[in-house]
Image (cartoon, rainbow, N blue to C red; front, side, top):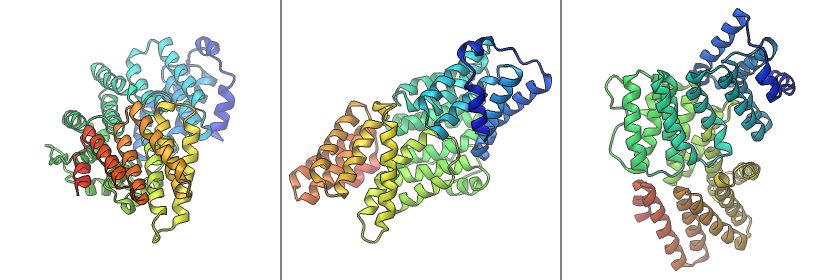
Length: 412
């Protein structure tokens, strides 16, 4: 109801009306918006489900009582809801631009890094190449720190590390970035972002076979990820979700599919209304896990095939907004689906197309996955030479990614 009423109100709010809308003068309403704006980041950590409701309320107050600089974040929250509820990515992009216009109108330059962080974390990732946002987020973190917004400086840095890891940046480079970010977060006492960052750092260390303990930082009382998870469950859903995602990601690449499936399920149990960058990758990897489990006679084949097919349908919708980000993923999922349904000729074509697309769009780790799956396909066909060639190609991709744990697995 809140979302629908907000949509009706804002449908009459054009760009011209936005630029000419009266300023908010009601003192109580001004402080109400400021309270909502300040509380939203903490609400996101504890229970993200309520964040869109708060931000839609901010947008409604802005339409009814006039604009202030905090109105920008109400409009941005509305943009997030358009993605989650209506899958309206174009509308979300438009309203994010409107939010920036509000900040420009009030000359609120000190709020630009915060909006940029939110924009590139939740909206632009759906329409712009993933890799293109890395430099922006790095600059955003620096800009936020320059104006004293330490909180969003390290939210930006945390997202930067996640994005680098999930889009194929060399893991040793990502790990060095993680070390710098961890040290600075600890120094500035940014514990909210810091806890999730530790789990991301651990994921990178595991894949890179780097012998280091990310929890070994002065002043940090938590000593391992299990303890971190204990503190997050029922109190910090966002942190629990991050831990389950990272565990699923590592388990998939180590081919521990049953455990990866358990972690994927746990991730969904923590999911809130706000669509996250990790949701894209969760859909991709859970689909691949589903196809693997659907082939096992001891697993509920129909359940996992249904889950995988639902994700395939999702990617068919997403690819309309970004061929760069989603083409290779969709092709690989379709290859697996064709193989499972016996259309082997189509499957082979789609594997090769997925490999080419991943290479063209610079997702070296996903190119490695596609080579591995094609290798498995040739093995089932009894073509030993082709199987070995594909396995070697996968090895080369993982080596470029810096995933030494996967090289060890392929050598055995």
